[in-house]
Length: 327
Image 1 (cartoon, rainbow, N blue to C red):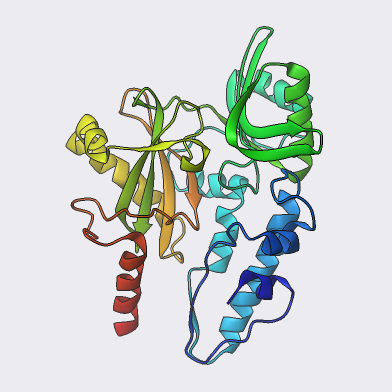
Image 2 (cartoon, rainbow, N blue to C red; image 1 turned 90 degrees about the vertical axis):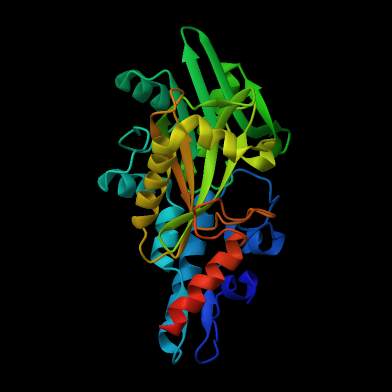
């Protein structure tokens, strides 16, 4: 069923006994217009409206499943909503004892408020994240020191406004940085202290770990020259075996434990993509994100010992769904 059909406002009609799997709206211009209103799909503005309309649509799907005899939904719609709210997601993880970077206790209202809050916390380096963003859209890696400021982000300042770009940029003019933060703030911002990540392949690196039915099954190393390691922003895949060897048996075991603990905060979600940061000393771990639709890893099969060897992320989920239906 296309997202456009659900987002148009009608109540979905399902077949009795239907198994519903909710997937990402993706990069569909028509769906984006229904979520954020008409305009350039690359614009940074509108994430709060996007979130509100997405959660309304998820609620319509939930009601449709509830009223359809024998229908089930593969994934809790309420948990999807939490995962797409960085502040609520961070709070849930922290409350469960999952290691996460410290975060400012409230959303900042603009650049001046951000700098004042950073000064109060004693932080010089932070990640500023749109509260309801995804795919690093609008994320700013901000470093300050004296009169010097460096903001690394995929946001492009254009004559038509702020647009998300596939090229990471660096801004050192404080007026430009302030304008970007002030433009993003009305949609809500979540600010975390910068977590120094391990260096691998000549730059920072982290892991995307897919957890299926509570068990980590797939992992990809994401390397980059920029603080954001997202593959669509110029990041590249690294050699997982090398990272596992560097961590050692106990370190790798702990890494998977943290990912399983993060996924366990969403017990109604059979699959979650956990973005795991490994500290520079290869001993500390912190969860950056938990992604409801984090299983898009083309060509990747399960890592050794994960229980999904030879299966991609989708085949692993289908196997678990079949097992659940059989019982």
